[in-house]
Length: 237
Image 1 (cartoon, rainbow, N blue to C red):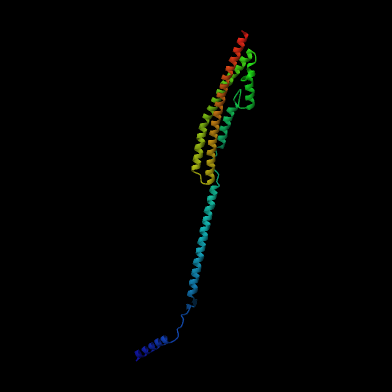
Image 2 (cartoon, rainbow, N blue to C red; image 1 turned 60 degrees about the vertical axis):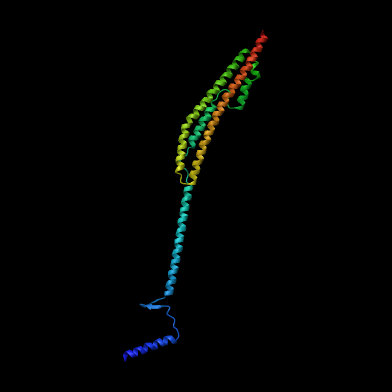
């Protein structure tokens, strides 16, 4: 009897579920006296995840900005070595050697005056003693110019050791450069060394050219002096 009654109740419940209105599942449940809302809970988890992602993105941006600032700081660091003083000293030495030139030196006024006195027409119109004195002065000009050229050459040769040291210092510094400014400054100093070498070469060419021109002028003046002496000799006879 009990089994038959239970079966009847179960059948009635199934029939009622099949024919009766659908009832929505509860949106919340009470567990241990606390109301739990699954939809609210899921929404909170999604919000927390999005907030965490935004925080991570902000941290990455700050890291990128810090890296950029470090790179800019490296790019603004100055090169720790400089060879400017050594280069200026070498240039000053070469200029000093050029300024020691005697006789007809590197001055337009002195050149004009010297040639008027010893190499041109009026230099051959004086007395025999004056002709001899002018010839002697021209010889001294030529010998002095060759001596000056050799001094300049010797000075530039002595500069080569310092130039080699400067190049080694700058190349070593450029290889360990940490930023764009250091690399640019190293390049500028290497260009300065090259400019100094070009200046030395110009000084050598100037000294050699001076010596050659004075020697050529001496030869031309000697020829003119010989003609004048021969003319006077014939006239005296």
